[in-house]
Image (cartoon, rainbow, N blue to C red; front, side, top):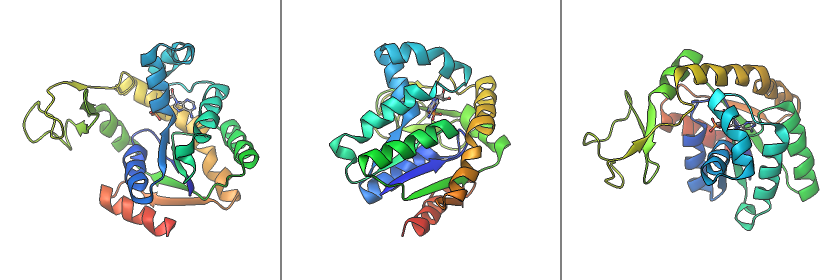
Length: 214
Ligand code: AMP
């Protein structure tokens, strides 16, 4: 099963992708995560992507299309994958269609997580994670049980994404509405489009997604 999760930054795509991944044994592919890894590793791709990511702008289509194409060829994607944060432009969507065709794979569903924009800014600017195990937290909605100590691994070090500040979040929202939102019409026309209420509780969103997948 191959899926796309659509929605603005902070809609919960990563959280839901994790649940779907463990339930269905398919791989979560986040282009944002891959690009951040490339920045950390100091590769040529990372070097080119860094300033764009920090400004909340999209990286060029060729950069992410290449990364995704190479990634879905790996054996762990044979059962299927969830694309989280890709495609983000109509150009990426047609490149994806072409690459799936060439690889003999199909796209089973596109699911949009529908959310309220103002709530997104609050959700994103408050989020942080454990530096050691990656467990996600939020200033307002999900604090560790013991102040300053990760619930999962006990680490006392936390980190915030460089692009999770209000100014960059607004730039990311703009990029979403300018370049990514047209994909909703695109996939509707292709009869692949579905949506869930991304403002519902996490478990309820997961339930609505399951209804679509089964
Ligand atoms: P995300 O983790 O999905 O919020 O992505 C973080 C940042 O990585 C975005 O704001 C973009 O700068 C870049 N990025 C991630 N995925 C893509 C993509 N498919 N196309 C262009 N830029 C991307």
